Amino acid sequence: DAKTTQPNSMESNEEEPVHLPCNHSTISGTDYIHWYRQLPSQGPEYVIHGLTSNVNNRMASLAIAEDRKSSTLILHRATLRDAAVYYCILRDWGYGGATNKLIFGTGTLLAVQP
Amino acid sequence: SAVISQKPSRDICQRGTSLTIQCQVDSQVTMMFWYRQQPGQSLTLIATANQGSEATYESGFVIDKFPISRPNLTFSTLTVSNMSPEDSSIYLCSVVLDYSPETQYFGPGTRLLVL
Image (cartoon, rainbow over all chains, first blue to last red; front, side, top):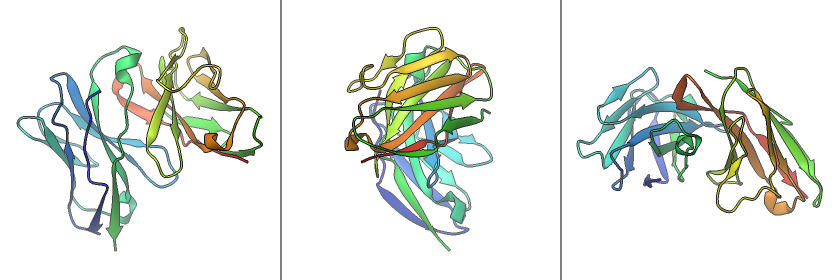
């Protein structure tokens, strides 16, 4: 699986937008970009994923660079509940069990200040 | 979505003993995964446990240490055998829904402390 690089930590203020960057310079054409987050004392939860086009859902937006070598997770208005570790993961699309596994990197610890 | 429960939620065990962790899903799923999260670390995949086939272990994990059962489409167990303090971790199971394979759902984890 291709690797991703994320900053170890970031800080944000409540009610402000947050841009979480991820570099994946060795991404292949069949890799989807997935984001998960892990709230304190919980299992990870899915946030968003995309292939080439920018994506929006109720939780966040995902902006993907034109060359796909980087992406940014955007939280439009951070809340205290968004404090978590955010993982950017490349996942090769397929229906076999081996290609559905997620390989977690170290992630970005997001702190949200009131 | 999928709702996953794990038992026990936490345990304290003596070295040399074994602990079996249960993972129950509220829907039938083919693909299930077991992860370990050591203190302050990210998640590491232990094995893929698809129903109807033998579990596939990642590098560094062996069946003798982490035997897995997958008797049906809603249930799996992971056993941590002959435990040592280095096995103190959070163990999580996760699933992929057959009809929505792009998302993985995680259980709450089992916190294990080995003395």
